[in-house]
Length: 133
Image (cartoon, rainbow, N blue to C red; front, side, top):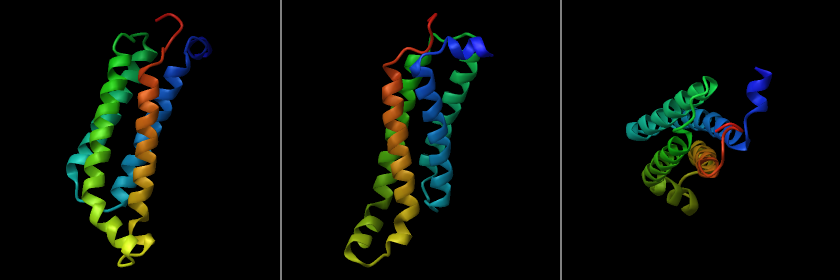
């Protein structure tokens, strides 16, 4: 196991962090009581693709890692945009003082974590994953 982590480069660790952030954003999205089942499904697909790719990299199979990180970044971007479109009214109401910030805070937490995961997916899609790739 020690030699496995010694042969990994920064792209592997970035993708692992993005996977954890995707899991956190999935939990935050369910906590935000949103009705967008499409966003939930997209986040689930992103998480499944990432877990499968990381599991395959443990077995030494890495030819599709760069492409899968790009696919995860695109799906994550679609999920974030779809989630933003459902919450624009609530954010506007909060800015106008009709809602309190506590009413939109779960969504804002989801948006920040998802945007961070998206950026990390984009960064990891341009990096190498192992020394013997």
